[in-house]
Length: 396
Image (cartoon, rainbow, N blue to C red):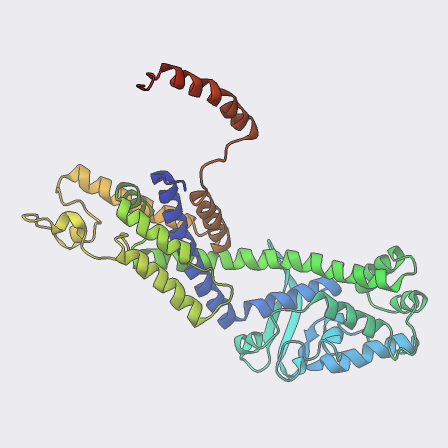
């Protein structure tokens, strides 16, 4: 088993980074749910995928828009205005109650013209009931690509009887509004008459776009993570430099933290139990001697040392000189900054690295190769013979 202060230091810091990032991510997810960000980005992303963004999408009219779109396909001569494709898809039987209680038509939300941002063209969403965030929180946060493809085929081939053919799909696609018609037309052409291949292409088209939407969402929530992560770092006094110094200079603390890190299980869901588990892991590390929290620093506990409140918290140096005071403040700020920057890779990265470091630490010595074993066997007999010849003869 490899045991090195550097490895123990890496394990301890990685553990603290991972737990702090997980706490910040949990807080971010709670805030995102309260604001309904997932539903907002899903709805805006779907709108950008299938609509031009010029027509408003009114969820209360989704069922009507679904019927109108099917009428346009079955009766091309109809003078009915072409509805929003987003509303038509969400008003159908497949996505109409996807991941929600009741139906989406009960949400008084309207997507107006798209607003161009650095994260794509997000729709401006308004609420007729005045409770926009409440309605957004009740939206589905995820629609699978399979459900989306089923909804598209249900819309394109209304009242399908018997086997659906690509000839029917291509004919009906020509009756749809742009840009939905153009996108589906290209996918249908590349399917070469294979309905299964067309369905797979629609699923991939949706997944590729939603990957982009996920990127927009992550960039939006990254700011929330940094802000509230910084608050967590300051409230818990998680200073990367002081933690690293303690782990490197005190072997007992380093070993105890490594033991706690080995038992830590990453959170896979956002829940109160997960939050309690992470808090317990951090408390266990603190009880082992890790400098976490705003307790009195060790230098101020020595006999004859008089410290003020700032010195007791470790923000100022107990020595009292101006240079040492300024240096201590810089160290505290730099330690906080390092911890906040460590939030950016995310908890999954740090826990993955922690697992690899744990494997490295538990690795035994490298086994001898076949060549070295052969050499050992070759050398042994002569050595034994020399020892035997040098020994005195036993008495008669």
